[in-house]
Image 1 (tube, rainbow, N blue to C red):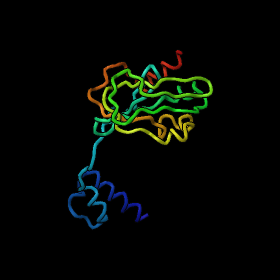
Image 2: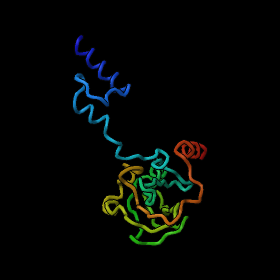
Image 3: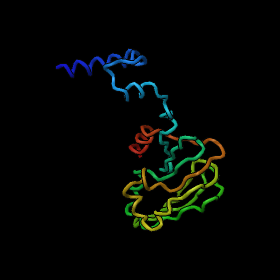
Image 4: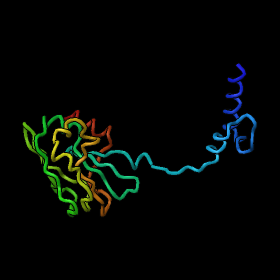
Length: 170
């Protein structure tokens, strides 16, 4: 019971701002943590994935200058088992709406369109050897390219909720 009382007292002191002065009840590391500045801040809106009507997704990096591009889970399911992927060249200049590669499956093939203008900074070369990873994790580890943007995307991009509504209507 006494230990619960001490913990509750420490929590109250931290919450009330009393932790700034030394207290015999507060642990040293708790006082230090309360005084440490926050090391980073990332806007939730900045890190939110956006989707296109062509079933690609993009997500901005923390600096807002590089976007990661991939195909949506909906597109991966619609394609079926992916057997080949054509990736763009690194340092390729791309414009909004350009085809930068293709995904081929046992059912069909589909171009990969970029919703941003810029330069391809990096590609996920693992997909060349294991194109089936697109089916396993299309909106995570199976991203296609990272593009350093030259301007903000101007086309229609949807939030996850808007995209879900869009795909349910199709």
